Amino acid sequence: MTTLVFGHKSPDTDSTGSPIVWAWYLNEIKGIDAAPKLLGEPNTEAAFMLQRWGLEKPEIIADVADDQAVVIVDTNNPAELPANINGADVQAIIDHHKLVGGLETKGPIDITIRPLACTATIMHDLIGDDMAKMPEAIKGAALTCILSDTLEFRSPTTTDHDRAVAEKLAADLGINIADYAAEMFAAKSDVSSFSDAELIRMDSKEYEVDGTKFRVSVLETTAPGVVLDRKASLMDSMTTVASEDGVDQVLLFVVDILNEEAILLVPNDLVKTVAKKSFDADATGDTVFLPGVMSRKKQIIPNLKV
Amino acid sequence: MTTLVFGHKSPDTDSTGSPIVWAWYLNEIKGIDAAPKLLGEPNTEAAFMLQRWGLEKPEIIADVADDQAVVIVDTNNPAELPANINGADVQAIIDHHKLVGGLETKGPIDITIRPLACTATIMHDLIGDDMAKMPEAIKGAALTCILSDTLEFRSPTTTDHDRAVAEKLAADLGINIADYAAEMFAAKSDVSSFSDAELIRMDSKEYEVDGTKFRVSVLETTAPGVVLDRKASLMDSMTTVASEDGVDQVLLFVVDILNEEAILLVPNDLVKTVAKKSFDADATGDTVFLPGVMSRKKQIIPNLKV
Image 1 (cartoon, chains in turn purple, blue):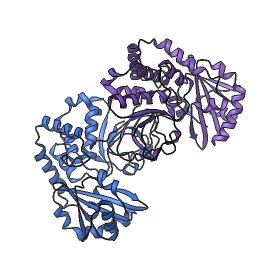
Image 2: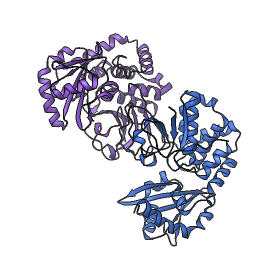
Image 3: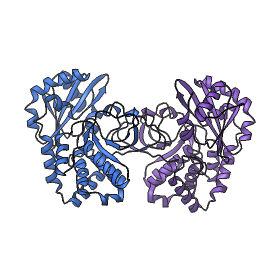
């Protein structure tokens, strides 16, 4: 049986690239028949990575069969995984998020979770000396994952180790990190083909604070103006998305990668209060600037108050 | 704040020794103030280990305070941990059991679960080159953990890697494994000071099959006769324990370490049926022999049918 390797349902670069890295390792080094899969359409940065390194887009799957051998990467949250994940034969989990509970395994398996910025960094460490055998395209995917998750080392989730691994990969590949990251972020910032609802749901996690359910959406971009030009229709769409997804409020943070700040859209008094209580920010109009805020995991979620 | 390192509530050798190993590593190598703790009285083999290697018995704690820094070893099951474990600040988990779900962490932390026989083997790998700095007493604890969890390499949970690590530790310490394991198992087999209910609960996990709740108890011994002499009162106590613990039936497997078999006590028709359906064993009297059965994790739980 082919072991399926996949990340979460909203495939960003790490959830697209890390399955490719790990499937290579299983196939070529461990002699285990494995294939990367996707649980949804990759975002534009992930699509750029595939094209840039000549990698085939992994097949998108809807669910997994009972007893299907799988490796889960970049999440341990059943809500972000196929409906039948607890029916599958989970062989390993490699992740860098908090343990949320809910995932069960049938026996003792390999689980490696580390407080690093990126799944690909953990994989680099697990692969060890066999990194020397990794083809350029796979190294390119790993590098792209780390630059994406760290926002080129700007995100406060970045550790010295993530940076060191990325710099080693870039040196091996003869890649100039600044130039390459600029290309990646330009690809990520091209959101013209997405509807407002798609943009809101693209990189989004549900989170409850004192009984209020939020969908906390982040849009990382080097061109915030392009997103803010769509502010009015995005705000309309926030109401629809909240209602369809059974949450009380969508929070949309437009993260300006180059200026290292977030712009929170403020459609109503609830979000105005959230801005004040969570970030001590006074929203006067329908947006509020949050200097230095770049990470949902480190800066937004832990501070969220209502 | 001192980081507390502990295993599960019924401290066997691995859940007593591994916290000592890891607290040494945190203190001496990582420069993190840490102390091993116990969540209950160690069993007789664990007590032997402490005495043999001149190690202080860790303090027994009843619960953990909110935001207490802790490292969990040898389990990931909240039912086997302090009541307030999800209020604590869990820093790391090192374990070799299946993921049961239920445990949550406040942020991304270090989690290492491996399908090896013993937590101490995983710690050996994580400690890496710093093993050279480990004092003899700590190495002795690690060796004892591995020989205990593998039943001196007889248990089917044993991997080549567990064996190799134990043999290296024994060589470093100048220990003859066969002689030392015989001493350990003699200590474990001295159950004279325990009541029947204590024996039943000493190494026991709850497990439900098709709506029937079992307490699956294992007694590993080199002297099964000593236990079987108490068969009548043990069977009486099984009824009391089942009622007190809210399960339908206690299953007591006396594992004969040297003969590599288990003896299942058969107090009633339910257990007789379990023996037949699970192990194809025909119980004629009030016990049934199960040749080769030594591991609850690998052989008992996966086969249990009712």
